Image (cartoon, rainbow, N blue to C red; front, side, top):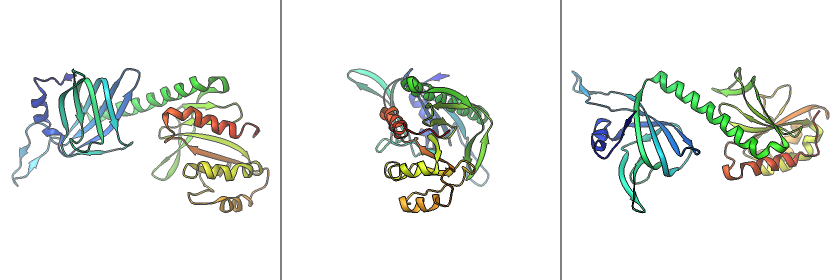
Length: 288
């Protein structure tokens, strides 16, 4: 990989035209090594060619940037395809120590990174896709192990396939293995390619005991379904207890019902506590 330095910074910015009209497609932050890997679809690179109709032919490039020794970073929201009008890259000093600063906008950045070093390389679209999939799955595995280490006295970590994942509004089966933390008959923490969630099965009669509390606590995160047909949700955001309870009354008391609670936006600092709250909610239940 090539390194960005004081000597070549201006040349680097000129060659990639300040990342004008480019998109950040993914950001991976490895907390343990204080490294951030960012992928950018650069719209302009090198010297554009002038076509016969007097318009410019762009040289689109897939760029991988690695920020090492991250001192500060701020990403306003989880996003895909973050548009860059013009990137801001400059050497700055913090407490008399020199760092290189990157942001996707000088005035109102969505992405702001201050690090010791920045290196980069151009990659093919195929390389980018392989790197993306590898990094995403590696992060999911690391995340599952981290949560397991905090909960291992009350759970088991396993790897299973055949989970359902929603693609283009349709559910398809994942043939590859993903982590599952089993909470000893009090539900599972499931890690899919696109999300992490808490899942629990119990009878319709027992579900009704907890339904009002579930809706109150997890109104925008909850799914309710039968074990026989898990892709048909019986709860929609805005439904109250009576709405859902009426639907449940159509099933036998012994019918096995499932709930899933989306955990994607659980605060990382409190995620273990959030899962323990769910486990404790069902501590007296055994769905078998």
